[in-house]
Amino acid sequence: LDNVTEIKDALSSIIQKNLNIIKRNKQNREELINTYGEKSEPLIYLIVATGNIFEDVVQAKAAARQGADVIAVIRSTGQSLLDYVPYGSTSEGFGGTYATQDNCPRQY
Image 1: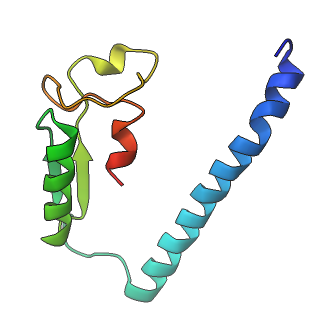
Image 2: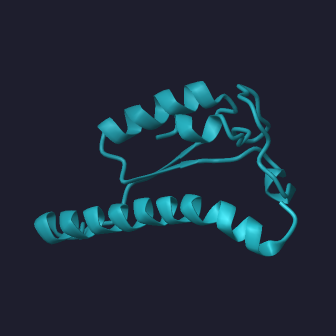
């Protein structure tokens, strides 16, 4: 890809696909709120940070089954200083789970 126009053209369909997913999720969330209403009491917030993505998924699913409203999978210490998300899977982290392109989808 030699110029900005080619780059924009190459990314356009990918961007649109992901924007549609976000819009659909927002619409689903609004429909659920209209049907069931907003929760009036404080939200139950859980932090998962074992350092092992596979164990984090087990703990996050268990917390969801027990009624957690928000579940945060904490990234490895210092990773926010990186300007990229590495490839591959890892089950190691320091002060949290290392966010990689393979680990992130495991959370959903």
